[in-house]
Image 1 (cartoon, rainbow, N blue to C red):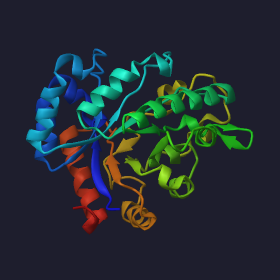
Image 2 (cartoon, helix red, strand yellow):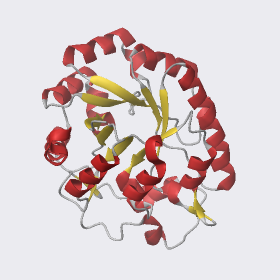
Image 3 (tube, one colour):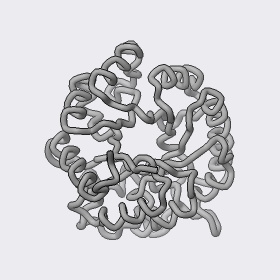
Length: 291
């Protein structure tokens, strides 16, 4: 399998909020061809499909030569996963010819809610499969909280049906959860063919957020992101601690990663300059593997 470069549009969510089509034009103009959608304007909570027709969005993708290969579809904190109108979401993504739906974050904190979440993911994944769409779960750091001799992430993997639920591994969030991402990829095998690529500043010490928290237990997983993760933690690719050349060699050896997806969460400087720099790093390190 050829590993392609993608861009998760969360990288430019503020810019999308202000000018959806104009931002897509800039993303395409700098050389990105594969995009992972975010489907809601975070400033007002409205789906972009409530502002523009699906046909207009699809026409813009076609005009710009953009391949919308996946879409993040989540729920706000405090909402149940099943609160979403999944039939509508699946229908919209099918109309966009978007082949994969990714659930970006479940606010799990213990054994019971993790097992319940796994069953909900199975239900959504089964609906997606019936529509010919792949369904994924995307990790952050809190899923690597330990419950006995396992992590919540381990429980999600073990209690979801491989026929219905795959995983999109965010390599840096896995590191922040205290795990070695390449080892996780080897364990997941073909259940994980999408990965998120970001970089973590050299000033961030320790990397493991659970070390920073010093074993503090809190039922609210969002506390990790509001109190322990700083806006300046993330930096442009190639300027932090991640060795992309080494990583991409290993990823290529695995042979089943379809998309290595840039997600720039840094908040320093112009975002378009940042994601252009990220694209250059990805091209240099993936080298001839990208068409």
